[in-house]
Image 1 (cartoon, one colour):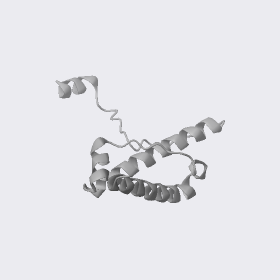
Image 2: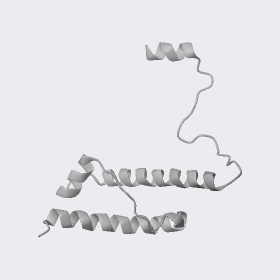
Image 3: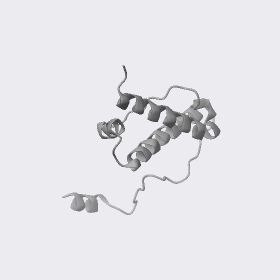
Image 4: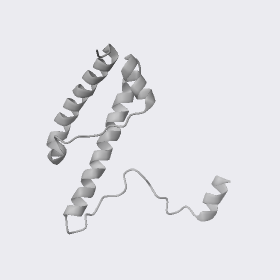
Length: 109
């Protein structure tokens, strides 16, 4: 009744979920056992269906999901705590304070 490619997708999905739960358990136990929704691009879905594709696709997708859950946990900690949480210097964005508006306008145009 089920096609072989669909069975293969479910096997990959459940194996990935088991691995994800094992990695998540020591870092964020409050998120374990919950239903997680994974949104994947059509390119990744096609690669899952056909069994072709670059393994780095799945690593990038897994990393994006981990970053999303990490942000979700940080927000939950901020909302739970009464004191303000001080974060270290920005890790993902750098702001150049020596950059003026005129230099920005000249680089854009």
